[in-house]
Amino acid sequence: MSEGEDDPRLSAEGELALARLALDQGDLRHAAGHVAGAIAYAPTMPEVHETLARIAAVSGGGIDLFPIEQHVFVGAVVARAHLLAAAGRPGEGLELLAAATGHAPQADWAGVPWVTAPELAERLDPERGARILMQVCAAVPDPVPRAARAPLRPYLTLARHAVTAHAEHGLLLGAASALARRVGEAELAIRWAARGVRAQPSKLGEVWLGYAYRSAGRTREALAALGRAVEHDPDDLAVYADIAGTLADNGRLDEALTWVDRALARDPTFDCAVHTAHRLRHQRDGRVGHLVALADFIRDHPDDSHEHGDLAECCRGRPWLGQLTPAGGPAVEALRQLTATERVSGGPPLRLPAPPPPSALRILATSRPGLRVAAAEVTGPDPRTPRRAGVRPLWRYTGDGVVPLVPTPSAEAVERIRQLAHPAWPHPPAAYDAAVGLATLDGADLIALLAHPPAAPATALGMVLGQDPSLWVRCVQVWACLGLLHHRTDEPWAGSTRRRILLDLVWGVEDWTTEAALFALVTAAWVDPTVRPDVAQMMATRLADAIAVGRERPVPILGSLAHLALVTPDLDEASTLLAARVVGEPPAGNPLRRLWRRLAGRFRRR
Image 1 (cartoon, rainbow, N blue to C red):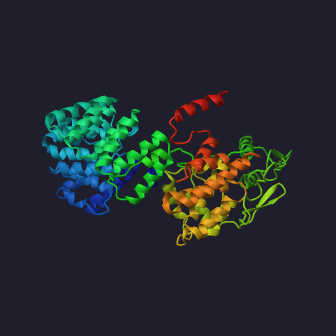
Image 2: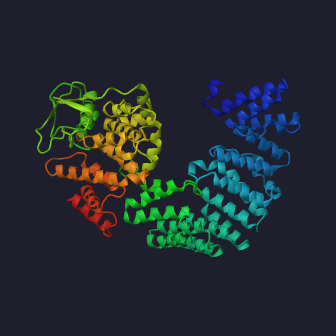
């Protein structure tokens, strides 16, 4: 039914028509399959349930027509749930509905009368009811976004009826509280959790009460409840981490770290405490070493008890930790103005105070064919000359332009980079892992992408990046260099091809590829501790060189290099201080960090 592809109700009606036709022909198996499809499209549509009832009536209940197999369709799971409830087995049916909610939380699987009927709660064993509510809670975030709460309301109604029918069941009250908290009913969550603690005092009950208080913004009561949970079970270190997180969220970092240290004293490898400790210590002093240590712990402990987002949280939005930095310099500003004004070729030349980086010059040439660029005379070291002799250049300068010295990339390389290139990543190790998608490309292809970046893809992301052509080109270059890290990985690092290629880029002419190659080297240091001394030395030397050149003329990439230095593992203190001065921040760990920022802000406003 192609006309119904964008309308779930029309799609459901199409499936029902086929189900009725199969029923009339006595083909119950196909009728069941089409009803399962209809439920997936419109789980609360009355006609769907009428047809399901017809199938049940002619097949002795119909449950066996919807078997639970290894790769079962969600519509079949929900259909079986309804038939189990009709057969007097609602507990089993609710468990299947909860599983469907875990698979697709946005669908209203439970929005049917039998789930919200008061008598269901009276028939349902409270232990089983509690487990079902916890199963639902485990499938959704805390809190659930307001726009996504409607499909959970039937479960909340079930919880209301259940706690009325079993008013003294502590586990049920706590699980009901957890659900209420997730759907924005903080005060109701507090009442239910408090009743549960009074009825059956326990560690878990106090944890639920603490979470409910925390959701309501009642920090003092939350900490008191979580403290009582620790008294119930001093060995549950997850509660220590919860207390630390609550304290940190309220600006009480020193107290938070005290709780983390208490947990680590009991078990130095407890994952929740380790993640929280590194996040809070980085929050306190800004040292990137805490995040590197956390990345090392994650690599060395792949079987943590559950997924943590502390590293990604600390890296999000930070230069080079979680995203690339925008290009800087007069050429880029001119390029952005040209993009905004749609200036055509011809007319007077574009005058720049210095020769632009080759990547910027290439964008100017490709986006505005015929545009002439005139750069002022160079003072100080020529940016068109490699910073070290013997490197293999990517370009050759010709008058006011550049010509790539490498062939164009293959169609496969272009397609791969278009699928992968992005201006943000969770953290450097995640970027390294994602770049494995480029591992099968030839090294020459990856180098070619640096000098011949393809046009942005015709996707939503591509259209956004296309508004600033420099941003897309930088994305391509960064990911191509990350791809080089996966090139010939059987070669020992010190004499490897990947290291040599990246060093050629680092010490070539000043360009965006310099930054991309350095980021790849920094990423290598994040994922492999054995290369850290080498990469830290490279970074210190390249930063010092850029700062020295900057004393004689502007260096457009200097700010970005400094941000890269600040995220380099094991960088020496002197280089860290130099980088911090370049970007206008105090060195990490400085107790006057906030004062520095305040004074710097005043200075910039003058």
